[in-house]
Length: 195
Image (cartoon, rainbow, N blue to C red; front, side, top):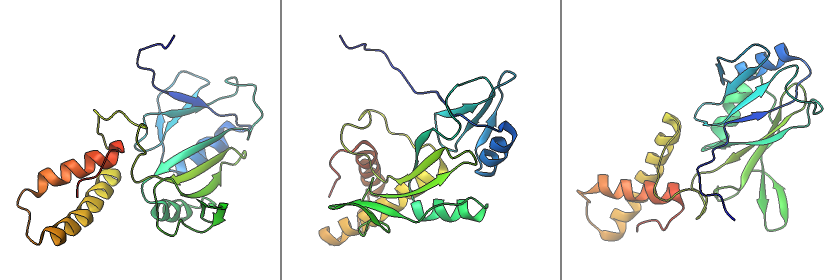
């Protein structure tokens, strides 16, 4: 039997050895330090609905044993920003026909380009560039952008695609706001893009 109620991932617990060192690291990433009860530290990444928690009594897992994904819309800009605040980020790699390969995906296809970073305890975060969702990955009735940079990136991609649309039709499109809205909704939900 399938339970038909909304369930959202709210918090992931990560194991750390030194709470203060972890607080400094996640603060340097620009993550929001949330109000919590004593003994619990909670950070939320910009644009994320899910937070992380750590503290001296939250888990028996070995420090450094956690692994997760951080989704970004522009992996080059994200890596540059992290390196700019002193975070060590590995080189880019991508999934190709022969498995993982060095460098960005040559076509910058969604879900393909990645880079690794670790917190001071060795918990690993995989940066993954996602510019549009695969079909079935999101509710097609809901379109949201979780940050200004996500919305800006979507608008820039829509503008580029709309320019191609106008080239194909050979005329200016006075109804461009509706076209942008259709494009951005389709891209966000993984449905067929307008031509």
